[in-house]
Amino acid sequence: SYVLTQPPSVSVAPGQTARITCGGNNIGSKSVHWYQQKPGQAPVLVVYDDSDRPSGIPERFSGSNSGNTATLTISRVEAGDEADYYCQVWDSSSDHFVVFGGGTKLTVL
Amino acid sequence: QVQLQESGPGLVKPSQTLSLTCTVSGGSISSGSYYWSWIRQPAGKGLEWIGRIYTSGSTNYNPSLKSRVTISVDTSKNQFSLKLSSVTAADTAVYYCARVVGATVYMDVWGKGTTVTVSS
Image (cartoon, rainbow over all chains, first blue to last red; front, side, top):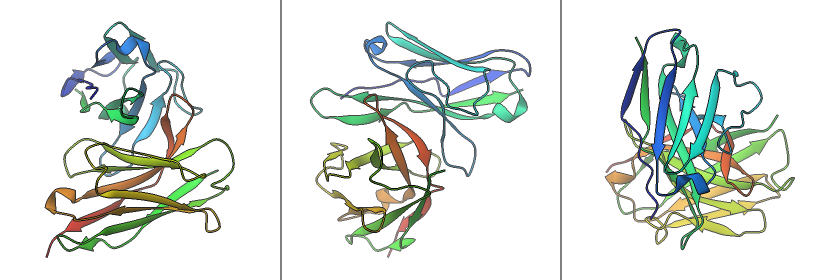
């Protein structure tokens, strides 16, 4: 089955740029979605279809996807961005199912 | 604005069947080309997709759970449900329901989640 690999943790100072990667075999050929999850809360979609933002999500959140790596970029990081972030794709190979990355804990220093 | 709410027992005995329902409010479960999904998250761990259903009854399941999972839909009640059989302690988790969008398959609306503990 398809595997998505994320770094367990990323740390960044306020005001800086955070980049969270999601690796997968030829992931550039798939559509990647990103979720933010704060403690005790349900996940929230922050980027879909590689780089689109749902309404209400700040422009500071952006995404890219090429080759074997997709990236969620958070510009001008704020304390409120501290959360777990998950990437997700749809594996439409033999078994059609949703695959999540293992998640990345973003710490704002 | 569509909202989802999970409901069901918070405690299930080992070997029994876990049953949860997700009630959709603020819109019809049959409107639009949406699937409806279940996702779970053990404490301190990542998200695990369980499966999805379309209002026609068409389903897709996580291969690792497929033998134990049934997802169904009741359009008259604007609900969809999860049954997970032969549960063990490993099935203890927060269970979320979510709306699934599009051919690229992402979840744009989530319920708040409900905690299910498997214990005798």
